[in-house]
Length: 349
Ligand code: NAP
Ligand code: ZN
Ligand code: ZN
Image 1 (spheres, helix red, strand yellow):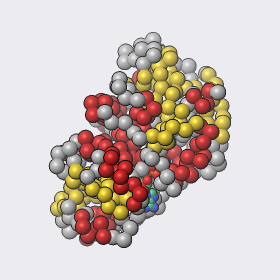
Image 2: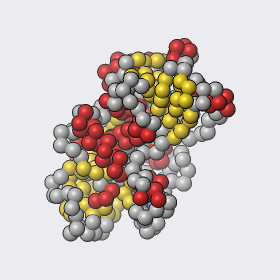
Image 3: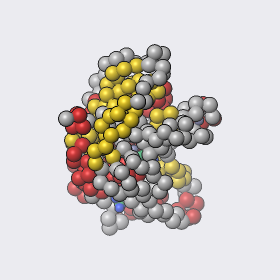
Image 4: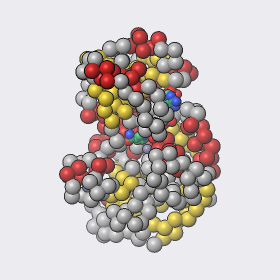
């Protein structure tokens, strides 16, 4: 066991503060990463405040991790010392169930080992995330960071990137499709870049009128402010696919009305309270309402390779860990352009 520096929450809703955690010695299939950067996902806030209930403390959040390989187990084939590598939302799964065999490790029948706010597959050892100086992960759950991607700006791809790439692929996003992205935050801005890279025409639907220029710079060809409702009339029945990234409760029915016949709305944002859906929002037009959770390991690698090919990374604001509590408050006010990333050098000091 090694003791390393981290920042985390001692209990639900407590401000994040320095703490010490233990990481295992690497086994034959493990890679040890010196963590360089870790993105700040809105899910970190939901979980550190136990907004989805059942959270485990002490909690060290962070599941958008990019680091450098410093040590390797004896049977590693994918990495060598000095490589850049990434870790997303999962660090293990049973490897034997149907979802694991299908590359959907996030739905492992035994429950995946989440990167934090979870346990290893022994169901005892708490996992701790990327607001820390080092992590030890089985190479199967470790991603290659392609050359050419800026390591700090690539970190958010490990959650925000895959969470928006996967539903675009699942729903067959193709050139010329109109994709509506609801909410221009960490996930939303990645959805815009990724949908545009697949040839879609992107409309951003936002509560923040001030984000229009950014939306267009990120690749959207259309922008609509949702307050007031005029956008819902203008776009009614015109959108092929809606990706809803909003973190707070809101009316799904209004967005379902944007879909063309047989269009789909995919919910990826995870508000803490349920939202009623009117049957006629779905019946009229054979519309579909679906969800999507991150993506499997192979699809995450595919997304990283797609981003390298298209020169896509996140727009980030790099912060020292000492600013993390302030950053959480700013995320809650939609005041981030468009992802905070912790410079983990600030934990070493
Ligand atoms: P974020 O950066 O805070 O972005 C959320 C955006 O939603 C905001 O920028 C804002 O965009 C909009 N918004 C916020 N409050 C709103 C409200 N009351 N009404 C309407 N719009 C509102 O968060 P994120 O990191 O992208 O995460 C978004 C959500 O996805 C979170 O709930 C997170 O837990 C969840 N998530 C899910 C998965 C998954 O696997 N499904 C993975 C990662 C994260 P505008 O200013 O443009 O309106
Ligand atoms: Zn996340
Ligand atoms: Zn499994």
